[in-house]
Image 1 (cartoon, rainbow, N blue to C red):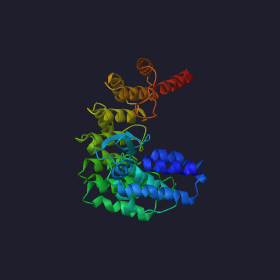
Image 2 (image 1 turned 180 degrees about the vertical axis):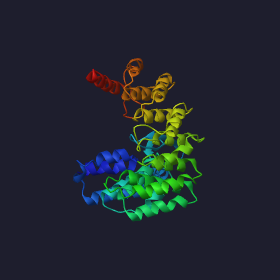
Image 3 (image 1 turned 120 degrees about the vertical axis):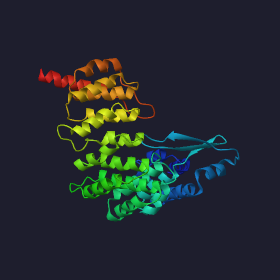
Image 4 (image 1 turned 60 degrees about the horizontal axis):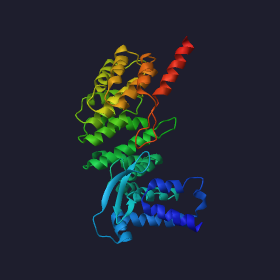
Length: 352
């Protein structure tokens, strides 16, 4: 056990949340006494309060400039990696501290969790660990604190509040769905007055997760927004939860335009939205067929899958041209176009 405890301390000091998570897997978590977990929490707190660079300089004694890079720590989040004198640490101590406190049953305040997140962007594990933990609380105190941020003068605070509200509704698996109505009301009004592009994109992502026609109506005005992240939120959110057999004429036209967007991610998300819909308008199938010639392979994969879901025989030759599935760099995600085409062939043979 002393060796395991030392290994946990070293993982905490390394600043890698994914490494600590692996050592605290539920199957081995019981090996650690509460006092040992509290000791690990104290190590994380010390590194968090001192800062990764100060801790690295203390450890190495080196005085030259620190080399900073951004690395993928797990499939969802990336963090900073600092290197000095041949030694490296990652700057995920805030996320590690949050995870250890949760494991110990320590209820950290909304304000403290937000303070840990705000120095980082929303792709950093410190941000993700804070917003996810708060959203899982699903209580009125947390909801009110997040909702109050929508009028904060700093965009980063508004974005943090928006994400907590969005995830609170998204994670609500209660049949009553108590947060759906309040969230839709907040985000619908918020979308009309948010000036910051990143916050607006988060608000629109939240609207796209509501099964209500009002969400579509709020998304549509931003289909031509100059910022790609905003258009992407529209492309992925239109009609995906509130889905009658066919899109409205306005939604269909917006998606057709978004499928020709200059931004690759927007084209890809719009294609997935169309492909996963029940709207069988020929214009939508033809738009997906046109994307088979896209310069980006990810868009071509989305088009093949969409055509397969729409039982369009053109998916077969398109899949053959794409070849074997590839794994996307930096992720564990593997392309699924051949699976989609196999299901199409199974459906077609069943009908025959």
